[in-house]
Image (cartoon, rainbow, N blue to C red; front, side, top):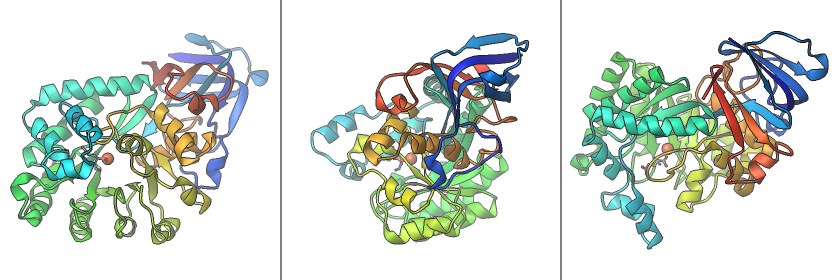
Length: 411
Ligand code: NIG
Ligand code: FE
């Protein structure tokens, strides 16, 4: 099956060499070709260039993209889309004055989602999650990381991870699985948090490794959740089974989580709404990708990750949705990109780079995803007719995506 897209008003994120990450300085530029064509064979991008250089060729399907932009699909490197039910009551409680922290301290928050998930069958959990995955694919997500972490018992964590595995198998979107057993201390371990850390280390990690359910390990390293010391033990145990860290840090407090992540070669450190000068210095000398989650800041009314500080120091950034029932009940990457421009003062070029190639890097898949490059997966989207790509983040809240192709197949 070959698909030829012709007369593209502007083809974005075109790379002639397979760039796999962009630092802060490089993110300023978004290479593109105006009046372009793109050729897809099966699931692969095989050719692209200027219409002026186009030599007529046969294709099974020819698409005329006059007036439209074509770009790689979004690479959402941080989500929790496998969950049961919702938490709209907590949303109303927050409107009425309770804080996210107060709700968690009352046994709400993550523990509320864990209880719901423990009482939901694997098939029901699959159906609820599959619906969300379908929705985000339609909005342009072509690669997605999904975390466990609403199970908090061995059985329930395995249930989540098996659902992720089934989604990976059943859907064309690229799915990356991360084990987040250390998301919250379960009620039963309220007075013995280290006891739960032991369960993670001695029971969960070995079983997950045995069943090959995850490649990455996450910890919510935060006051009231997992301390630096506990995080370090969990990362060490994960490393001994080949699990690479991608961790939640600096959402509410900065106390050394970033340095710890970098010490253990974390692929990414995510949230970073709070950031110290030391954190920035540590990131500058590392291969760890900082991941900002602006929809979470928006929903919780907490600070936005200080993107300009990172970018102006030459440090890369990736953008992700954090789709989850508590802090970000949305997986719309178009909104993420807009919000990064509007609230974090990222330019459209920086934001699109952060949500494509750098997002792919934060999942360890940027050699095959995140740019228009010969040999890469044909994960692309076609916009409606729009005046320029600046219009994507500018006209926020509207859907500008007309068609999404994942592995060369229309969604
Ligand atoms: O990334 N911060 C930790 N975990 C999620 C939220 C979890 C929840 O409230 O259910 C996050 O924001
Ligand atoms: Fe998260």
